[in-house]
Image 1 (cartoon, rainbow, N blue to C red):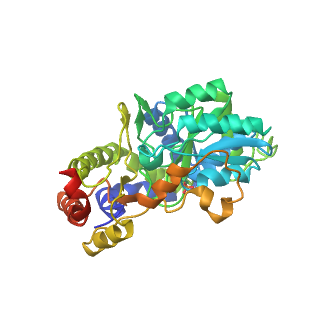
Image 2: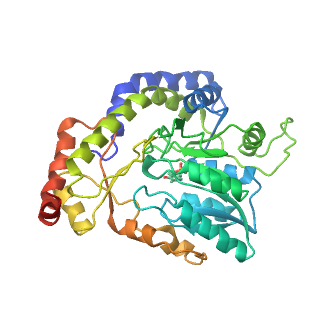
Image 3: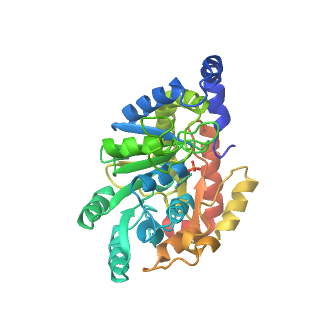
Length: 379
Ligand SMILES: *Cc1c(COP(=O)(O)O)cnc(C)c1O
């Protein structure tokens, strides 16, 4: 059984991808070819946003968002501590200060109450809060109503890190519409992945869109050799855009399959471990299906699953504030939930192609090894 099954997807659409790649080889516009613009149109339509700007990775999408808002030394950006390192590294890269905020232990996402406390502390310390990067962890949208209210009251912008959340929905709004800007990733294992690195940034703001388009292309102006700002080389390759165009066509079918698998898992496992909590009105893109194991040793569960032929992964074993590169960061508030989650999360196989037998094997293996300690309380 594969954890992320890229092979079955490729088998299904390989011919179409080959035709798309051949087209690129024939026209030869490897950089900013027609497929890039075709993809941007399709993405904007899919997310119901005015602008979808593709770029070289999810990390660069975040970086472009911060650069577009002129974030730099002296500025503070609030981020959850329980996330992938890219969320923090871009803040440090532009010379700003990342301030870690704790998450909610049921949704895994940034806790608005803790965010408010952190804003107050940071202001007392004379620092300049500029923005928030909420992360739609494992594909579940953050609490955007609460976050937008705080952002509005405290004059902060929201750059949503939806690297794992493409296709998710927050109260009728697709990922891409839930902040001033949204960054996503097309890393192969993400919900919508290409065959290399890729990403995109979504926004309804015309001015920001223009700036981001310039920034991803060395800061170009209307004149090719008059660059009007300091930029990056952060474009998406035409070949990757061509591949994504075919993958986008099967994306909703895959999402529907994952939704079914997730409800099957939750129904079968909810009395044996803590299953994912999806608040009303929200839809996850199921980048991961992540349970919490609090009564049994997680490593022994992981090993037992492995013996049964079931792959599983720990995302993430260490919150960012405990990682060596980020230990010097000041921590205005407690991050105990982030630490708790790092100690008990386990992600199970979920993808658009997992079959009934494999789902049953995941469920039965887990029920077998969790029975001893959990069953007696739960039943
Ligand atoms: C994958 C990921 C990123 C970075 O995306 P890349 O395309 O690999 O650069 C950023 N944030 C989160 C939460 C991610 O999961």
